[in-house]
Length: 230
Ligand SMILES: [Zn+2]
Ligand SMILES: [Zn+2]
Image (cartoon, rainbow, N blue to C red; front, side):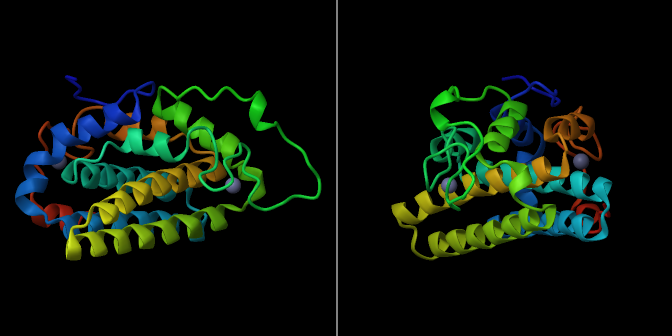
């Protein structure tokens, strides 16, 4: 895969590969796994601030950056984010195994039945967003609720990484893979609730290499990244 920029019809795997090519060199030299996690959280929290302030630009820009840091965490741990997302959400809710999700029993039964939905694996990142919109219809929650759910998942991922880094057990690593998939689900939960197309956003800011210096590999220095405003 000789990818140097993200296009709207690219896959999650292609985005992860772009992040590997762009950021592996600086990230491996500058950041521990914890540093990567902190950077991911930092931009995700700014995105939540965008929700609180009703600032869609802040929301989508920072969510795209947070998502890119999550790919870097996947790369550091050699986790295939697209594969794990599909394993956890094969066109169905990971708990009730339905699409749309039936976890909260509804009195009025409406919506498509899961049997009517094609369960083919989505090809592009955009197709994944659409799939999550079918599993978890955005009209069932507010944007604020979607944001809170994302924050919960970030906490669960931190916990999974903490446990794994302490004991290095296989089942703990599995938990990280699950939590990354849940994170992806919640990122698309926010974008679907905010009517933001993540693929478009990523194609705008990662059209060539690093979203700031546009180099492959990224040439941004440590202090600059630490003070980066978005
Ligand atoms: Zn469910
Ligand atoms: Zn850069």
